[in-house]
Image: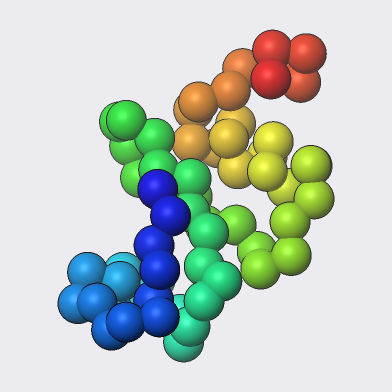
Amino acid sequence: MLADWTVPNPVIDQALFEYKQGGIPFVLVIPPDGPAVQLPQIQTAGTVIKAFRQAGVLGSSSSSF
């Protein structure tokens, strides 16, 4: 999901509030089941893979990515 905050949006405002963020970019991995995993503002392949693993949407081997 990509959210555009160019025009104020209460759904985006609520997500920023819930995750204690002051603005965008703001990146979450949202798995089908379980809690979302927040990524840092600057991502690397490693931080994205780690977040996917934490969210349970990627196996323990990076070759399954």
